[in-house]
Structure formats: structure tokens, C-alpha cells
Amino acid sequence: MISPQNILRHELIGLDVLVVNASNPTHVGISGRIIDETRNTLVIQGKDGQKRVPKKFSRFRLTLPDGVRVEIDGSMLAMPPERRINLHWKNRGK
Image (cartoon, helix red, strand yellow):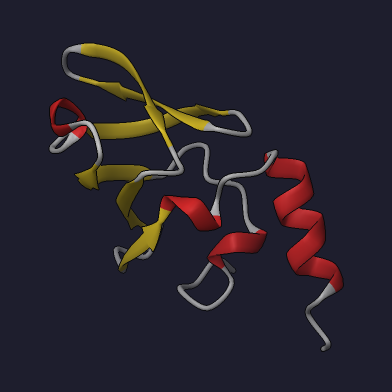
């Protein structure tokens, strides 16, 4: 089950998100559902269409399926999703 403690090991696609801080002020306040993820960006489907937001210089508030909200620095996500999931999975016991 996805939780604040293991969120980096999970798929983000499908989660609701709000951009709470970003180096580009036009990205702050973008909200919606994550529909795609690349190494450097999250694609967010909102009321105004799709927006691509860089991970590295942004801070995101994710809403987990149980309603818990987690804020995460996008630099912790800035790698290909499959690498992030595998990297954190391998380091689980350390």
C-alpha cells in the first residue's frame, strides 16, 4: 500500500497533485491528476488541459488513495520513474 514513507517506490500516475512551489511562478497552483511521468517532468491533466511541469525545481503536494497528502521536493523524483522505483526498492533493507 502506498504511504508517505514509501511514496518514492510507487507509481505516481493516477495520483492527484498540486504544484505548491516552482521556479517558474506560472506553474504554482497547477492541479489535477498525474497522467504521465518522464525523467524530468510530470504531466498533469487539469481543468485547463494538460500541463508539463519540471520536477527538479518544483514542490508537489500529492494526495494518496486514502486521502493523505504528502509534500515532496521534485528533485527527489528527478530520474526515470522505473529507475526511482527500482533504486528505492533495492535500498529498502539498508
